Image 1: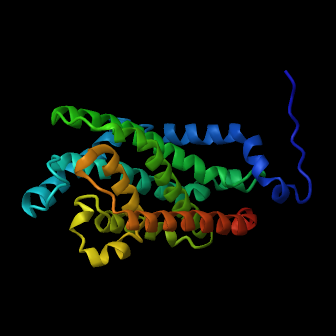
Image 2: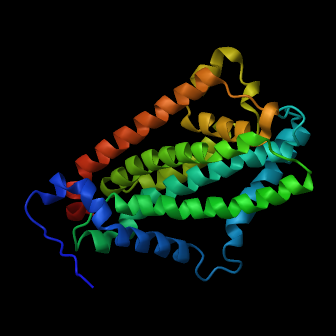
Image 3: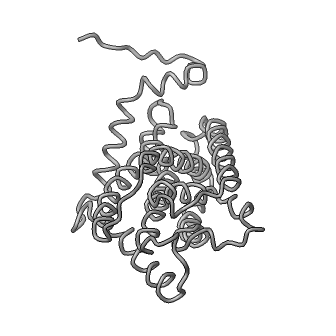
Length: 275
């Protein structure tokens, strides 16, 4: 078997950075798999946590918003299905950017000793959260079976909206993990951001209840477009996308991802020195 040699030379990390991402793909696989294993190591019910968290949150939101507040669902869709269709992308986003924000700190020993594209670290954390997303999707199939709900052909567009959610998670994660290296107070802010974002995003309610004059402003929350996209794909004709707002959300996601990559690359050279 031929042995591939990796030559480290002055300036190489900058000029060949994106090629090095491919060259270090085995490290990426290792970190992602390690994060998946560590996440549920020595837990009593293992990967069931990935199912229980969104499921229990869905029950609470259905009771509070659907039964007590009597907020309307999208069309005649059961409120639980509407909530869970939004809970899936939100849980993925929240877990991904939370884990990514701490990824460099938890891998400090590795970062301070050897060279590799640091972008691999937060990306592997997002991939681990995506596995949680896939596990949580299984319970959604059971919920749809319980309510005898059959999605339309739009379900085939789900990979598109998953990709958008992945981009949003990566953008937010890159910003937070780069800031967390220099300002350790960020780790205390992240849980608050995740909790606050849950209530200002249309997870427990339909975004159609937002007054028309505020829809564009509301859509500046990047997850609004992602959640509306998931509901449009899963709920079918009973759910509609507010296209001007969806475009605004896409622009915000693209900006956060682009600026996150730029900021991460700008600060990456100092990670090993200050971590």
